[in-house]
Image (cartoon, rainbow, N blue to C red; front, top):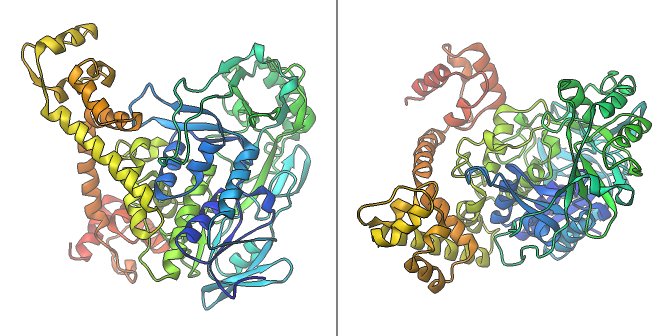
Length: 623
């Protein structure tokens, strides 16, 4: 029924598990994906969308590394938007609205076509551990499956408990049972566990909505795509989303049910996501607001099911229904299912190494919501990293770790490992101190060579990336080297109310002006001829414009990143004795002993470790 022993066993088939299984298998490991329901692989349990602020950068990074999320998102998209276009390119974030049923189907089909990957549908109820080393998993039927490494991606299923008003019942997702046994095994092994909660809004029947009363939210006129490969194409047709608002009446109706809300009557005590609060939390915390936005999002191309983004709730279903019927456009709404909250077990991620391998059990990896994160994209990126590192460890190769200046994924993992989290962690651009370097447009330049080197990104990817990079650099050099005459340039500058020039200069200098775009520069025949003769596509043109306009900012961040890397290069020995450093603060000694950072740079990011503590360590290490 199974291989004698798998290289990598992945437990859970959500976004983290799917990426972990694909990565390990594509790198050459004999891999098994065990999940409770094979029909729900990569299910979009919450909103039917991928990407968004900072999350879009993560999807691009997953794609650049050779993961599947970008490809699946493109193939099943029904709308594309580049968010934050009014801001600088460090803030631009791609987002797609997805066909939820097609998304899960496409993921399963891609996984089934992945060599080295087996599947099994059953609950994993325990772990096999000998001498602090993982040896496999046990299923609810009592079957033992041997594995050299195990990746746990259990999502919200570990002892999951669903709340709707006064009602509560076990479950990992609507209509699916919870998973039991793994938490208990991990606690016996010495792991610290905690509880978190998240929630989801009602799903409604679009035939019962009046969209004419709502604001139309179309996609981009010229939609882009996620994947850097040529396996996908931008959308030609798109579906609209819609926006409406709550009101004081809606808020009053919701407040009537607060005494029956598990969040307010004390039955839910675990912490929910700060940046995606329930509607009852929003009207409680922001009592001065007389309305909140609701985004009404289609669940697919052909279905009539809609997702009410912004109305996450665990209030009783009758309260949900009565309040939602008072929203403009929802006067005759019919429910497909009510919203609910779910509590689940997680394990504080300071118990992990940067590879996402646990410190207590060799060969055991955690990825996704088990680490306290929220969001498909955060989960998928962790799954990818855990799958890659599980493969590398089994085959006795160096681990794959991304630094904070190399990827949003590097920021995410470092934040979790170094700082931990006591509430569901969500990625934002503000978390990345080098976000000008970590743009969505250059994820392939940053990461594809690294992935190719360890055997995940294929030859087609690296060839495509190198061609794009070469053409981009050559075009930037063209602007640096090519001069203009005032007679040619001044009419363009006058048209844009930009200061005219009295003498010729290099094109790069004028192109660097904030109000001069590539479209303006293309009015110069020499520039247009270069673009046509070299067959430059929009991806390259966007890259070049960013490189020219933001060259000063980019160079400055590179210098700052180089300083960081010098501290990253100072390794702390595994056996480092913090108790011997009498000049360390008590808090620093406690935190450093618990987290055991691997570099001075990581140590400096631990909450409670001061610059003075770092100086003490450097002196002690002879630096």
